[in-house]
Image (tube, rainbow, N blue to C red):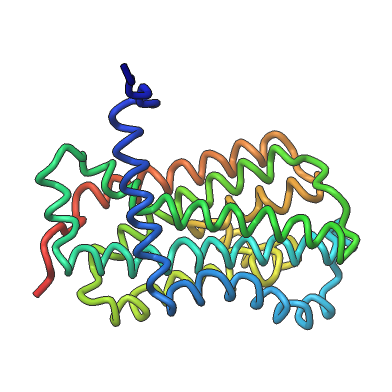
Length: 262
């Protein structure tokens, strides 16, 4: 007499796993999004190198390898997670996928989280590969405080997904998603320490840029590599990231659109 193998995980975990698998299959079929999500974070950091050559990084105790790694992680936040998820949320909404999912057992949180999981896992995998590459190819060594880098990665991935859902709520079509996502991408690239570390910016400008949504997560990633940070700065960065995440989640719960915007 045969017996069925017991299912592992709670019902919520099983639902999330099934939804994430389905979303991963849909993501793989969209070559444009896959190209942007995979290649942009890998290629764009090399465009940052000429700008770094004109900056005195050594004065702040930052190596080129640490800056390149931080840039790569920041681009993964913006392209592998944020931009791709804006398109994914809008596409699923306009195709009535989200509306159909809400009629089943899935909760709203599970729907949004399950849709985001493949992109977040992709961003994490890219960060780990790029970290190994920077350590070997650029002789950057290992992170001096890896727990800070992991905290920054986790905070950046979660916040990027929440910001993507918020941006999708004001985006009408997949095509217009490239426009609505552009402001955050541009501001974060130039001001959140992704292309140029905030530590080398003028003090007043840096104090403003540190208020941007992804700045605390990027600062934690770089601090984990260099080890040059205090407990006060770490708690400040974590508090700022948590505050931005709470605001983004609240806004998503309040204004996310489940019906097609036609």
